[in-house]
Amino acid sequence: MRYISTRGAAPELPFDDTMLTGLARDGGLYVPAAIPQLTSAEIAALGGLSYEDLALRVMTPFIGDSFGESELTDLIARAYSGFDHVARAPLVQLDTNHFLLELFHGPTLAFKDFAMQLIGQLFQAVLARRGERVTIVGATSGDTGSAAIEAFRGLDNVDVFILFPHGRVSEVQRRQMTTPAEANVHALAVDGDFDDCQGALKAMFNDFAFRDEVRLAGVNSINWARVLAQVVYYFSSALSLGAPHRPVSFTVPTGNFGDIFAGHVARCMGLPIDRLVAATNQNDILHRCLSGQGYHKGQVVPSISPSMDIQVSSNFERALFDAYGRDGKAVAQLMEELSLGGFDVSQGALEYLREQFDSGRASEQETLATIRRVREESGELLCPHSAVGVKVAEELRDPDVPMITLATAHPAKFPDAVEQASGIRPPLPAHMQDLFERPERVTRIGNDLGALKAHIREHVQR
Ligand SMILES: *Cc1c(COP(=O)(O)O)cnc(C)c1O
Image 1 (cartoon, rainbow, N blue to C red):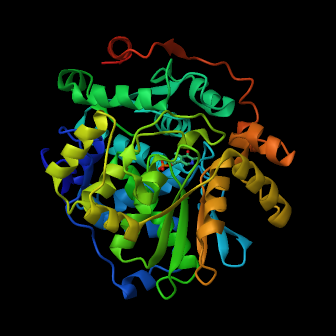
Image 2: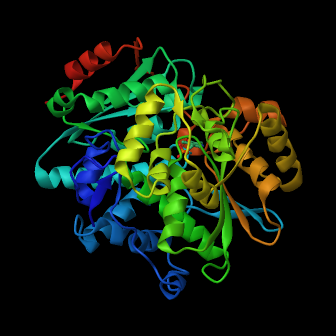
């Protein structure tokens, strides 16, 4: 399996180099040259497998010979052993034909653990085999950073630096990033918003001298290996509800478009998915774009679902690549326009996008009301991101097709909003009970690329 860049001007790479590289050298994102296909009979044969066995079967065609079967089996087992639910991604029912896919049973209580725990294992295996080390730099609106730190803390061949917007992540998110004591973990609180952090990260990747000097590697949701790991739970949940004989729909609380793009990949592989719905909060650039209003950056407005507070949705580039007939030059042109403020989507591309994706948005008030009402109706306590999903799913769902809404975080990760909505302050799971007593270690730093690079240079272990 070979990977190509969405901007058409970077070398093709096998899976392992694609994973270590993150962002392509032409500024694009890597995608498979062709999506492996499963027949209906092959999908039916996946029913009843454990999550780990299913992960092996779904991911193997994308991984090629980068990992052997027994090695991959072993790495998958290790990745998910720290989850506190044996099903890994259990489904619960909210209403007739409406289900919640609980993706928050990993060590940092958000769906990002599914990809990050696996990537940690895969990175370690490749780097040990090659005798190399890398510097991982990530930008986070909260959950990516904690998941990355949890996955890479204490690993021999990796330094991990996480940029987060100072004062704009929840206290639980911040403490998950600032309390690990391992010397290879560096939490950086940047004076800016998430888009500033993501912008700095992109600029570091585009500075090839710096990139090569510190052997930069990226684990943001642009990393193809993360998207791939997330494809698995679309299969596991659809199979549980009768796929491939019965199509299902998904609603996905969306920010960077990584999670929902994994659903798109599952559909392209042959999984019968009826609707794929992107649910945004008040930062609704994706909803506006899919509604035909073009893709024009605004200001980020902080919300109670902070992990979706973004205006530049990096994985959307992968969807645009497909929408523009896999024309890298056309995508490069759009991204050039985006750097100046935005772009309009061509009629043909918009038709493709609207065939593939539906969208909706939830306001702050609607999100709070949904948390309260779902608690009363079903006893389920939703995090604010999941509530955005449930609200939009209820609005758009076809009563005859099972709808699966992704619950992307545990309510205890966002206790203030949940308490405001429901009057209930959700307790942290037992393994995190002492989070508020652990000492914090963090560097506050200006929104200044030079200062960030200098800090990283100074602190990498060589
Ligand atoms: C990251 C995150 C999202 C958004 O996922 P994307 O892949 O960026 O679209 C939604 N909810 C939570 C809790 C998250 O951590």
